[in-house]
Image (cartoon, rainbow, N blue to C red; front, side, top):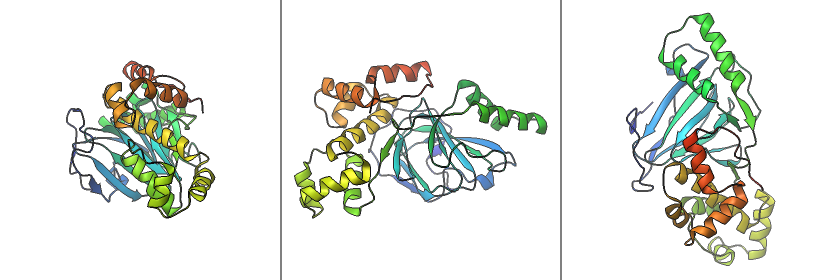
Length: 288
C-alpha cells in the first residue's frame, strides 16, 4: 500500500487541522504483505493528518498503543481510541480510520484461522504490557514456529473485552443528521442551536429532536456533549493542556469543561492524562 506520510520516526506534537487530510484508499496495513504468521503487528506514525476510507480485512484487527488522535468508524459508531485501551475490529467488519498529524499507533492483524473473534462486533479490549511486549517481539524477531504459536495464544489470552461506551459515540444514519454529526466532530466548538441546524438541513425542530433521540439514544444536546468529550480524549492524549482542549471543543471556561468531562467519563481530564503517563490499561468506564 502507499506508505506516504507514514514513518517510524519519533513523534512530534500534532498541529490539528494544520494540513488537509491525506486520504488513503488502502487499509492501514495490507495483511497480504505480512509474513506467514498468525499474528503480525506494524507501527504507524502519521506525519500529516490521514484518513483511511471504508475498507474491510479478512483478518481480525487490533488497534492499540495510540498516541495522538485516532478515531475509527465501524458498526454504526464513532470510536475515539485512547492510549489506555485497544480496539478489536472483527474480520469482515467495514471500517474507516482517521488520525491527526503526529499520531502514532500499532496495528495488529490476527488470522481468523488462528483465533476466533473476541466478539461479533467492534469492541474495546485491554492490552496489558505483557501482551504489548509479545506483539512487538513477535513482529521484530524470528521465532521457532512452535514458540510463535504458543506466544500467539498467550497474547490472545491476555486480551479482555471491556465496556466500550466511553469510547463509542453512536452515529445517526439519516443523511440530514449525519451531516450535523460530522460537522460537529470536525469542529466540536460549533455552537449552533437545534433551531439553527433545523434550518440548515430543512427539517422541523421537533422532527430533528425526535430523530436524534431515535437514532442515537441521546438528545441533540447530550450527543454534542459526548462528541466533544470523545474529541477531547484524543487531544488530551496528544499532549494538549486542559485549557487548550476546553477551547477547542467549545468551552471557554475550563472548569465547565472539567465538569462535563467528569460527568461523561466518571473522572477528570487530569486523571485521564495521569493514567496515560502511568500506562494504566484499565477500563475508562463512564457514568452515563
